[in-house]
Image 1 (cartoon, rainbow, N blue to C red):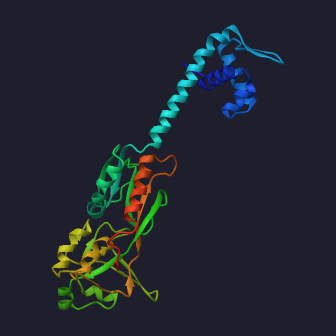
Image 2 (image 1 turned 90 degrees about the vertical axis):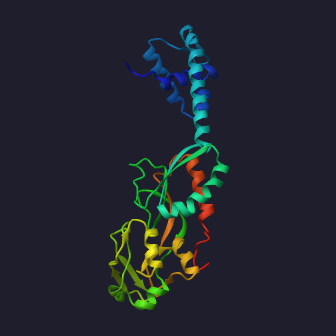
Image 3 (image 1 turned 90 degrees about the horizontal axis):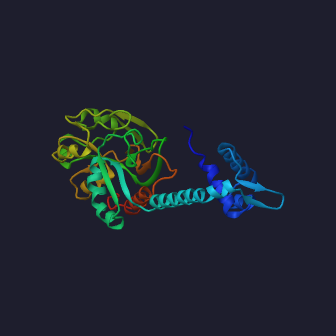
Length: 304
């Protein structure tokens, strides 16, 4: 069975209310021809005329009068449903599935969530913490916080703040093994590896003069989370690379020292990414604005 002609019924209801094709068309933002065709299509479908038309007057037929009130009720119900839906979509409420890197999520996202929930008590967050990059669309996530050199071009990315990487070693390690002066020197050192690095687990360094070197970590530990490398680095058992939000604490108290400071790894940024900017729910916009406000000028920025 074919679906009811809801569009034709809506046009008929509006013409019956306005007693004019022109006024009904203006109220609905349509052309008179479109409304006329819609009503004509409905009459053909129903097998009877709804209006008596003359050059000066438009009136309902007996058949039209019997249908007008019910058609008007359908039209009003549809308007109420749409208005209620708009209110729900514009009011920040509901569940947000959010993905974030493990260490960053635990130390920098979780601590600000109490303030977020006080501002938006009708929002709930399902926080997925992992250094693995999730597929937002396939895995059903509403948004993700990503620390990357470049965001995925298929996603809509809002840049929150830059995040620089640091190559670090404990003073005890440098006293025992010496301080590398050039990336080539790292071949003789213990380099701790991070397995979720984009484009393989290698360090791509560039000097201030534009020279490039590629280094492959060869130390005793490779891990899927950078925080697992810290105990070894602090004990003086290897050189590690840490993102700024982790490194600044250890640099500030002297437990780790930046090395090869004339060279740099690709600098990334913290991004709030979503599958699409179209019709993005108000709850996601609220979270994006909150994160941008709280993390755009973080305390872990180095130098402080």
